Every structure is written in C-alpha cells, then in structure tokens.
Image (cartoon, rainbow, N blue to C red; front, top):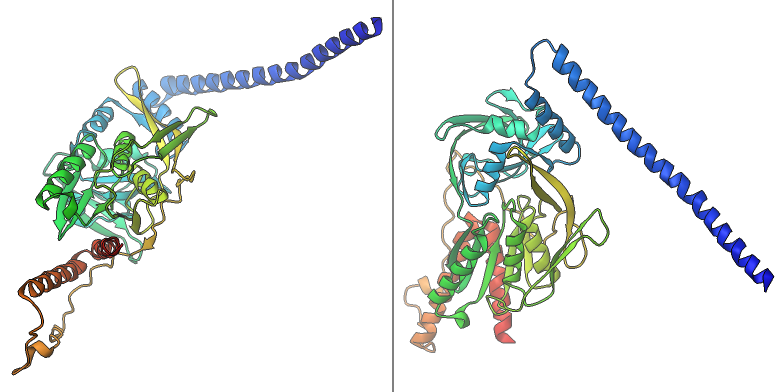
Amino acid sequence: MKKFVMATIAGVLGGALLATQVAAPLLAQERMRSNSVYEQLDLFGDVFERIRNQYVDEPDTAKLIEAAINGMLMSLDPHSGYMPPDDFDDMRTQTRGSFGGLGIEVTQEEGFIKVVTPMDGTPADKAGVEPGDLITHVDGESVMGLTLSQAVDMMRGPVGSEIIITVVREGVSEPFDLSIIRDTIRLQAVRVRTEGDNVILRVTTFNEQTFPNLRDGLEEAIEELGGIDNLGGVVLDMRNNPGGLLTQAIRVSDAFLDQGEIVSTRGREEGAGERFNAQPGDLIDGRPLVVLINAGSASASEIVAGALQDHRRAIVVGTRSFGKGSVQTVMPLRGDGAIRLTTSLYYTPSGRSIQALGVSPDIVVEQPRRQPISEDGDEATPPLRSEADLRGRLDNRDMSEDERRLMEEEREKAESVAKLREEDYQLAYALDILRGLTALNGRQ
C-alpha cells in the first residue's frame, strides 16, 4: 500500500515537474514575442518623432499616421486598406447604388492599377475599358509606387470633367490612351428582359437593391409570359460583375436553390467560420438555368456561380472568373474612418476555395473581339436560294395553318438568336443551351 501511495505521489510530482518544464519555455517564448512587438513599436515611435522634429518641412502628423496605417494594411493583401472618412462615406454610398466617378472596379497588381471590370453603361464601359486592363498613367502621371487609394484619388474629379488614362492591354503591342468623361454613376443592379420564352437576368452588382430588383423583375417577366408554365428557362448573366455584399450573393443563390449549403467562410480561428444554407423555395420552380461569367466576374458573383454549379442547379458558361475568394470586414474607427481587413476566405458548397483560381465554367465560350470593317468593302454574301424561291414550285399541302404558324414562329426565334450571336456571342450560346435543356425537359 505504501509503495502504491509513494508511486502515486512520485507520479504527481513527476507530472508537475514535466508540466513546469514544458510551460516555462512556452511562457518565455510568449514574453519574448511580446517584448519584440513592444521594441518594434518603440522603433516606430522613434522614427515618427524624428520625422516630426527633423524633416525639412513641418509634416502633417495626421497624414503620417494615416500613411503608416495604410502601409501596414496594404502589406497584407491588395484588398485590405485604410479608408479615410471621405472614402468610407463613398463606400457606403456605393452599396446603395449611386455615386460619382468612372464606373470601374480596380485592384492593384505589380505596382499598376488593374481593372477588375467596367460597370455596364458607365463612362469607362462606353470608353472601351476592358477587364484585365492595366492603368499605368492618369493624365500623364505614372501610378507606379502609389497605393490603390492614392491612384483612385487621382482618377476622381468633378462630374463632366475629362480624364486620360494610359492602358496596357494583353494582345495589344503598345500602351494607348483612353479619354473618359466623369459622370454620376447610377447603377441598376438588375436588368430584366425576355428572349422568346426565356428570361435574361443581367446582374451588374451586388448592392442593397440586387435581390429585390431580381425578384420583382423576374415576377413581372413571368407574368408577361402568361405564368410560370410558359417559362422556358433563365439566363443569369453576371459577366463583368465585380461583386459587392455577401448577404445579397446569398439571397440571389437562395432564389434558385431549395436546400443545401450556399457558401461557408473560414477565418484564422478554427471553428470561427460561418455557414449559410438555402431555404425552401425556387423562384422558377426548377426550370433550366444557365449562368454566364467571365474574367470580370468577381467576389459575390463567384459565390453565386460556385453555389449553383456545385449543386448542379445551373450550367456555367463563359470564361474563368476573376478569383477573388476572400472576405473583407469593414471596421469603423474613431474619427469617422474605417479599415477594410481581410478576415476570412469563402468556400463553395463542395469545399473548394476559388482564391486566385476563379470559377471554371462547365462550357468555355470566349467572346470574340469585334472585327473592324475592311476598307476594301467586301461584298455581302448573297443569300442562299431554296425550293421556296423557285418559280412554279409545289406548295406544301400537308401542313395546317396552325402548324405553318408555329413553324414561322420557330424560324423567327432562330433568326433572332442568329442576330444576337453577332452582337453577343456568349449570351446567344447560353440561350442555345437553355433551349436545348427546355426541349429535353419537354421530351422527358
């Protein structure tokens, strides 16, 4: 018995000694890290005081602090940064759908300003700015070495004023200038139109108006078609959509899903992420759905495309998306400014991160560049002749008037798609897929 007690005491003492031996070095390491941080902060304070007291001109200390904060955040990733009060106000205005500027979403890459996407119908879009363009100069001044916020400030100006940006574009041998007239940007989050018995939902951004616009516009289009039974399918066009509010991406995805995960986020702390699931109810009752994306589709639009693709609810058509798979949290600060900090990555329902990879379409369809009209004036191809053009032909006597009318309607639909193909090849391709799916569902 004494041996057992002694063994137990020895075991406890041994365990305590082991715990002390393990804990002591860990505590020492933590103290060293803390001391190192304080030493670095002391170094920062020393540099700040030397600048304040010895710089050739008396510096603006508030601007020095802002620049230090912004430099710290910009060293993390291109999407983290400091927002002074004016920029913070602009961001809140943009989420409501109206603001002044050029109408481009930009990021920073290798010192240049990279265009994520020009927004539909904005001055940048009308001037010919394209996704992936690198802006090297603004009004003749280089943007190299500037922060993203500083470069954006250079592009701001009064509504109606002109700005000249110098652009480097893949496939074009020399940089070139584009003239843009600044204007007030009023974004219509969703535009709705019908092509035959199909509805096209053009989603340009994810702001507070997006889901209400989509729901109401879709309801009106279905009513015009005579009810849900007459709806063939839907094209969800998110090309050149730079993203926006995560909450709106979730609601738009949920509009076409009955159940299952939409997106999940994972941050630094294990188990601190969030998971968002669909609620019962599909606005189009399971009708075929085609999603259109391209290199200008980023962030929230990639969440929607990824969710619908993973659930096999839609066929994704176009080209690979931008690949912004990070979530930024805007944290207000004292003095009315804020910081935008990357706090997590988002994952599609299958568990894939699209950060720097993008969403790959199920069917890759490039949008052909418009070809200039040849100067030698090639003659138009003469129309092909058919039996119906021959004089003295026999008419088809086995077709009823109703059958003839239906055939003419189908021919008109096909001709309208052919015309659309010249204007927007990717959209015409998406409609062709949708019609094929509708026909297949009808046969089944």
